[in-house]
Image (cartoon, rainbow, N blue to C red; front, side, top):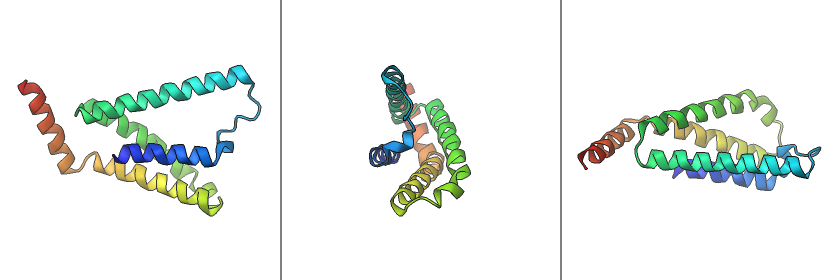
Length: 125
């Protein structure tokens, strides 16, 4: 659920701040390509989350790597983000916090036990 929350926070942030996409100079065909790529990556993320839900360990590792890359970018841009208006800053910090929590919670002992139990159940079939 936390991963879906992170996704919805990002969607809300883009809905409230569409200028963050920086699509000013793009023409209609270019916007269609950008939109198609965004839909592709949203679908890819949904498939990854579904694989994590099915307890595929590889999906947890891939998702963690993507979150880590996101965190690196967010932390690199933190000085700039601190100058944002309070609403944008709050969403930025919420996204940073949720990404960090997701990364930690994917590897706590309870999560490892769940992945092992789900794998054992899948192999027992």
